[in-house]
Length: 299
Ligand code: KIV
Image (cartoon, rainbow, N blue to C red; front, side):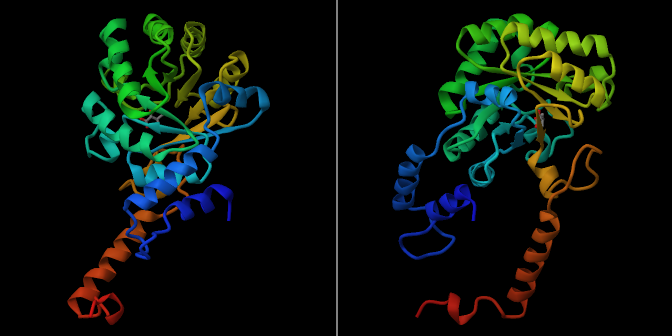
């Protein structure tokens, strides 16, 4: 078993011998000790992965349980994405999620993660109300959640905001290409092909002080060119294999998203099916008196 996974299992071993029901103080104390053993991925370490040729794996997470698992599996970055608006809250776009809701979820993730770098999305329209308000919103995110950085959609037009955040000591991951918060302006979730603009956006983000940039839904060859030109890591989603890292929405990867998923997603599990099966079995067992059994019953 990998070291991270062993730690995860040990942290959750329940001192009262109630497997799977371990929410008591003793377990938390065990976890608190563990945090000192695990070496945290900081922003400079995250940036250094590029020079080291170490490909960066990032996933989204939105709550304590999933964030603990994703972290234990040894991923480098966790994004509390505004995709939460769609996959957790059930909205059709990322626009409705609020700053307070992002902070509520980021706080759960921040409490769970011991190793990965945790980045939180600036929800719409927090990054577009001027530098002062952006610093105020991002400042709340860092103060209230234990997370380490924010992600901001936009490139050239967000130069000043990125500068203001960085000069306040707030690390910024930029997000260029398909920007889901601009879905109405872009006319849908489409591949972005304006090579000149995309290169300029990525360079502007780097020049303004961003420590990394997400490239979403752009042609692979262009993402490769941008990745070679930038000295900060590029994190691709639908941007091919030449990026310095990859990010996916956790629900897509685990098969928890109903219906079809974008072409750039690889499903590594079908947890949706597993949940349906488990819940159906429980329903049948209850109906037919097979649950609870003697082993679940107190005398
Ligand atoms: O909100 C999100 O999940 C994102 C992606 C880059 C995955 O921004």
